[in-house]
Length: 113
Image 1 (tube, rainbow, N blue to C red):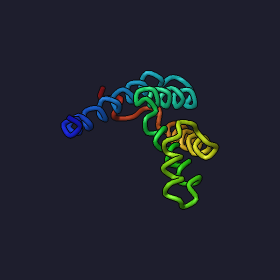
Image 2: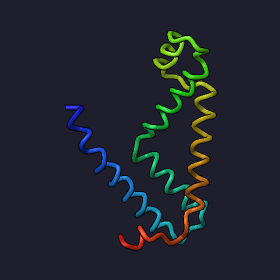
Image 3: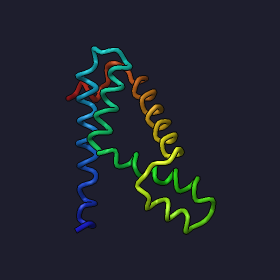
Image 4: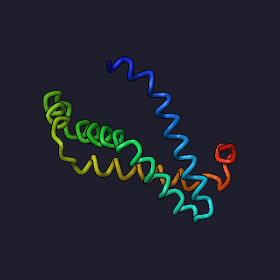
């Protein structure tokens, strides 16, 4: 079952990309910061923040594990977010926001939709 789900990954990625392009096109008249915020919000919500959660878990385990495999695995099982997880997540979201804010107002991909 899980193996067959891999076949849907490209389609899901395309669907998310089209959704983000539509949000970009609809927010074209808004200031760049507002448009970037709307796109980023849509991006995070459409993926359920799954990748951000995984990144936060890995950051906590990498820093908090102190080279101990057992400690690293214990941290990975802990549902709470540590300070490193928060710092890495905020930094990644700020970087994505800055990148989205630098998008041109009119994109060829959006014009073809």
